Length: 278
Figure 1 (cartoon, rainbow, N blue to C red):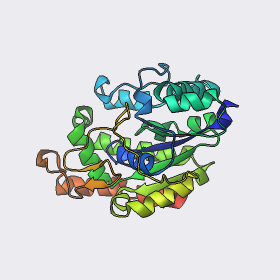
Figure 2: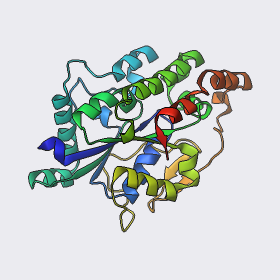
Figure 3: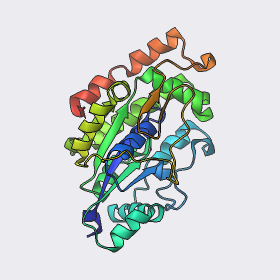
Figure 4: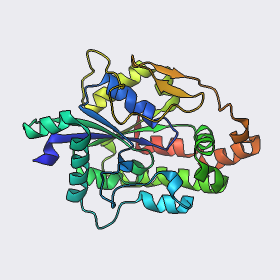
């Protein structure tokens, strides 16, 4: 059956937390058949699944509402949409599907979306797993303000509300399959990348590649690296500046940092109480 052959690993986290870094690193080092970056933005998807780029939404509230899937979209329809996308984007998956391969492993990365849609994705692919990257809320919110106009214009209160909503929704919706979820901290991934990849490969039950795979030939390349922050080179090495944003106009003030810490600082321990960190 189709659902028994496809084993997606859904990579997610908050936008700007390092989801592209994580997905690219896993694909280069682990034997996945395909990696799909920003899968929910793909134009080939049904309108009930597809997201628009954030700049196309009139407000943060409109964007937040769009993250949720159409309630009338059943598990079988969602599965068919995803499989159709994988086959369209990857000749390898198309050939493996046509020739009846027993296992097709896909990395499906989408920031924010997969956090809100985890329950439906798990229903569509019961054997799937979720790998989440977590980043300090001050760093993450500064990234939102720096990179996306809609987030910048929303104000700090609205950003804190969205941050909490995304993680609380994910914690609630994955409570029945938390054993199929793991989280890696951004700073740990950067400082201990080899051990993180080993642990994540074991969690995903995907062997390490004998040779690092280049991302250069992929049609759906990851986001351009954020200013002064991170990227993965052609040899699968992380190139990172661990410092804060150089754009001082977007940096949070000390008072704002305290507000973020007070409102969101508890979430990391809340996640650790319910989901395994590597």
